[in-house]
Image (tube, rainbow over all chains, first blue to last red; front, top):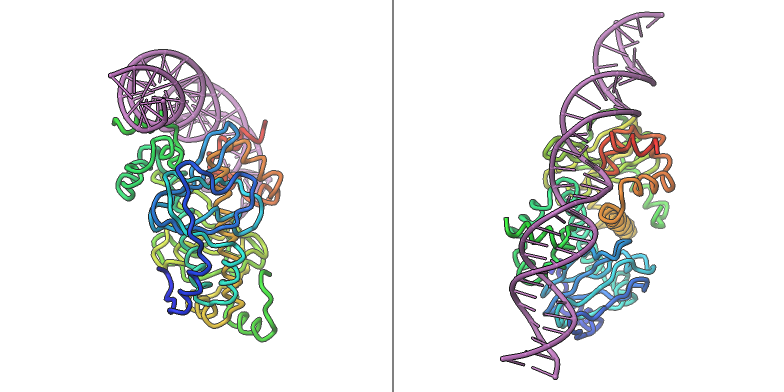
Amino acid sequence: MFADFDEQELDKISNYFKPKSVTKSSILLHEGSVCKEFYFVHTGCIRTFFLDKNGQEKTRYVMLDNHIGTALTSFISQKPSIEIIEAIDDTDLLAMNHSDFYRLNKEMNNWQTFYQRILEMAYSFQNRKIEHLVTLTAKQRYDIILKENPVFIQRLSNRVLASYLDIREETLSRLKSK
Amino acid sequence: MFADFDEQELDKISNYFKPKSVTKSSILLHEGSVCKEFYFVHTGCIRTFFLDKNGQEKTRYVMLDNHIGTALTSFISQKPSIEIIEAIDDTDLLAMNHSDFYRLNKEMNNWQTFYQRILEMAYSFQNRKIEHLVTLTAKQRYDIILKENPVFIQRLSNRVLASYLDIREETLSRLKSK
DNA sequence: ATACGATTTTGACCTAAGTCAAAGTACACC
DNA sequence: GGTGTACTTTGACTTAGGTCAAAATCGTAT
């Protein structure tokens, strides 16, 4: 995907990835727990989100088919997570243990390079999100999703999509009819 | 700092870092240019910021004495930068070339580990910033700076501090007198 | 088919923070 | 030591989006 693994390496990597099936709405990581797993979503959809003081959900990241990710801040620090990981649909995924992940990181240089790419992309993604939050209106953020990620509009409920855009569901409903 | 370099490695690294002195208000990276340098600020202060559609400045990151950083998104992608790097005070710093940086990343495993730590921290920092932007009021964000980074309030102008908090100067002025 | 809980939409109203303008203050430079 | 330029404060007003509540629609288990 981001790195050139040889056959032997791929073999080792796939040994560390354990298949897992979860049903819609199940929680893969609870608030306050330490994130121990890194995911590759095969089919389905999971998301990470956190709650504000009023219990409003704020979606940080959505992983559809063939995407990777986790609650990265807790995964990195191995401290209790603010973020929750939830299955949005019935989902088949592969999970790698934190200790196996960091073992690969030590032992396999290509994996370290792979992880570096992930971090670079994750950083750039977050940075762009901040730019959008502080410079664009709700409508402009919606239009960007519409253009760049229409699949989100098809596959996510308005409630989740609104929380991803950091607007209220009512506002999203009004934007859509404009 | 984040990694255990041996003497020989430190020697190689310091060869790549070139000293540089810049005066207050000078621009180290213009909007639209590719970011070619990574900085270690010895004394002084630099910041990265970008402009919204109305020309309002939005400060992303501030580097005071002994802190490191750059316009990371452009440095990673080697594409034109949205972010500008500006000296806030007269500043003495060390600069490493992008190609030298990535040469070290290839050739020195400890450097790769060091860069990985930087990315992990940069990611977590951005993530926390998003959490604060979407869950806290202007006052709450100001109070956190006051508590966790009072040096920012001492060393940054209200204009810069306001843009860092993503509020208007007028709002910051009103918050301070509360 | 029916009925229940989930979502989504619509309407009326509210509020935090932005905007614009003007006055006050600091401070660098001649 | 005065004066021009930049910074900060204050005041009056506006606005994007939030809030709350009720109606409409959808989905799915019986």
